[in-house]
Image 1 (tube, rainbow, N blue to C red):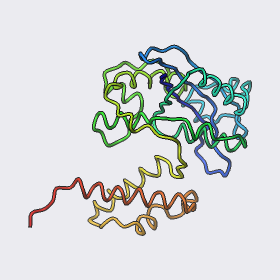
Image 2: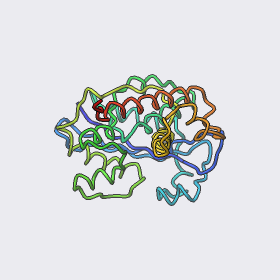
Image 3: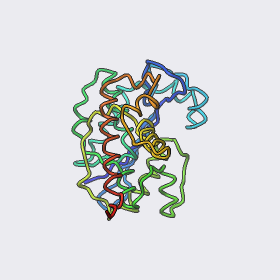
Length: 258
């Protein structure tokens, strides 16, 4: 069994658009059963939309425009990556959060490629594994996890291969304590981490004003005039998340003596 640590970068933006964000870099490292690194994969991707990187992304990632201009398109790079993955007789894919798998699946579908490979791959959300291990409730970055573990961060943050290498260090540090029953297969998720954090913030905000958290109230005051919230699948998913948060908080609150 090999362990593949994956990271991607995508061409994010700070403005609304009906055009999708796309993967622009894939980085991965392969660890063997003894957790020794035996291989790496790195590739840039030229996106269909927003191929000219904006200043925010160039500053965040340090990716030069020339690297994107000369890169292959997603279908070629993802085919190469799948070939690289298949050098392992068996493997589990590890990501920091669920966004990387989501982006790969979305781009696969955007290019009208078969997504079955990605739906069948076993992957593990190492961010959640780290939070369980450290008994933390708030998400942390890979750099934050390294600091928590006392491991120096090396490389450039927000570059796919460097992030994959740093994530591999976290993985090795907590490997013996990971519960592999949390390994999973990809399923469609319509909300993102930022939107789920907004739900948490809304719950805290209502409680700080001594208002009993209410879904309809949350939608009215926190989601109003947000075009992204018009998708009924996303709203249904966020409502389920809201209800889980309410139930979790109720269960964790000490019962009152009558």
